[in-house]
Length: 112
Image (cartoon, rainbow, N blue to C red; front, side, top):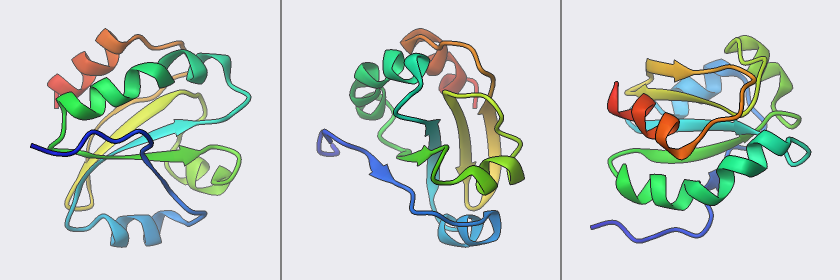
């Protein structure tokens, strides 16, 4: 059983090519967010529970402002958003500008 984490890893500034190289042998879900985003703050309290439930994934926070170029490369124009990858290949995305509930995020992950 994985340890419960208070805070998920934050992605440093990088481009898509570097990202795909870094996650080439991993199963990850990128969580695109920003400090100023009220809908992002709405889902953040649920993230530790979601991480615990889906411990087969490494969850990584992507600050939209810090990684604006990466967001553009990945066609992420609304936050909060989620993209899942396995071995560097996109498995699925839940990308839009709408507020997301815990149930909606879990339904997305279950659909992968």
